[in-house]
Amino acid sequence: MSFRSEEDLSCPVCQDIFKDPVVLSCSHSFCKDCLQTWWREERLRECPVCKKKSRSDPPCNLALKNLCEAFLLERDQQASEALCSLHSEKLKLFCLDHQQPVCLVCRDSKTHNNHRFRPIHEFALDLRKELQKSLKPLQDKLKLFEQVKGNCDQTAEHIKVQAQNTERLIKEQFKKLRHFLQEEEEARISALREEEEQKSQVMKEKTEALSRDTAALSDTIRATEEELRAEDVSFLLNYKAAVERIQQRPLLEDPQLLSGALIDVAKHLGNLSFHIWNKMREVVSYTPVILDPNTANKEFILSEDLTSVRRGEIQNLPENPERIDYHRSVWGWEGFDSRSHSWDVEVGDNTAWFVGLTAESVQRRGCMKSGFWQIEFYNGKYSARSLGEPSTVLRVKRKLQRISVHLDWNRGKLLFFDLDTNTHIHTFTHMFMDRLFPCIGTLNELPLKVLQRKISVTREQFS
Image (tube, rainbow, N blue to C red):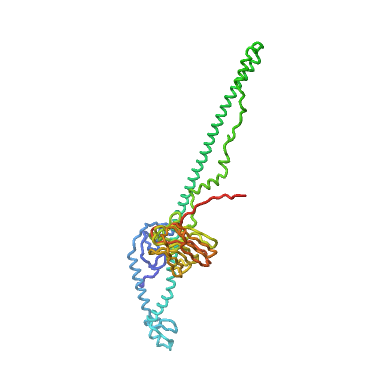
């Protein structure tokens, strides 16, 4: 192979010895990966050298591949049998003082007098181990970079899915609100039309009655005025009849305008938005704790309104820093660092659950060791647990179905009650220094649900 230069066996793209060479219809050859990368970047199926168009699946250049493999084998053999440039002997030793390979003749020469030597293969093995040891952190770092990049790619895809689902749910919520407002608008306009029709009918009847009375009076007046214009004899003869006609038409009460005849505009428009807002309580719900899906364990499935959680199949979710990977739990979206707060959780017939609070600074990866306060139900027993301390068995007289949680952050108290009987279950006392987040978890497919609170609309009274 000595008559063939390395340039003759090099790919025009990567300038290295061909690897899996393929040949185009123009007779130019390239590494298969190099050609595919070139076409992917240029987006044109043409030869990188002569620019002639080619098909997308060029055949393998088997002859060239064999030549390249033979060339590399010969080059490796020549490298492994390197000879001393001074004595043309095999390099079998390594001079530690000169830090270079030498032959046996060099060892006995004056140049290397009193030098230290090691067998070249033995010394190379030691250096390989040392280099491999130095390379290990880089390899580990590369794996970490690849892992994080893969998670970033997964996160990017999950962001798109989250955005699509969230947009769908937002549209559904606004559709319900628009439907409510449309029905309310139709009902109020219908009430206005009904009042308009009713009062218009009253005015029509009033007008018709006035028209009849007016016509009758006009006829009496006109006939009497004609008698007054008659000759004296005729007047005297018809006088008695004229008087009787007037007496038969007694004077009516003065016509009056109807009170309340106009549309009650104030009733229809006054505080309209307030009354609608007040009525919206029927379709609008409020939950004091909303669950954060970005913290949920991968086995958890949350409801669309983010108020309940149950255990299911492990989902393919990103390894974001907020997610709990060990403790099967999900956190509330909002944390508390002052004042008093309360919320209720329905555990129902779930056979393995916990309800509690966790500190914002708690370790989210691996086993949690502190910053967690909870009551739990497991293996048929109720207990109170503060991580880092022994658990306390709770004596509960009846099966818990709904639990009320009360936090007084400033006084350092966390209380649990049976919501159905208003019976105290347990109290944790701790000087809280961190922001606290509601936290619930389950090992069961039956859901845990944060209960809604009644909405009240009040008006400020002035004395």
